[in-house]
Length: 125
Image (tube, helix red, strand yellow):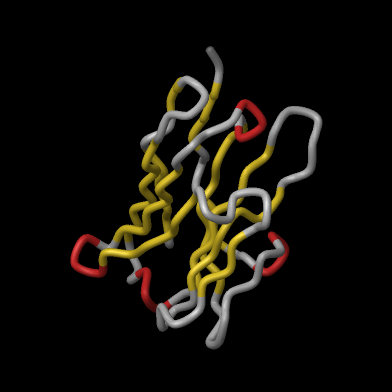
């Protein structure tokens, strides 16, 4: 069974940084498009950034563009989300997900079949 596990969340002050990790088991991450999503209390889940299976395409939400960077380490079968200049409005549970998409990467959660359990990110002073 395909499994994803996120880590790296925590409490950080505004302006700080965190790096989230998404490790896959039972499958190879570069066989799938990988997306990072987040869900804040009382809000719908939203796409943050995604990476195509080839690595050639990256999509990033406007609210985090220039601050968040998605990357992949094939040797470690891990996808990262580097988050810099964090703001209180970035507070949410962050999820990684895998989509069996050959080209590109979707930013809509309905396109993703496999999900991790999520990791909490809290930005507060």
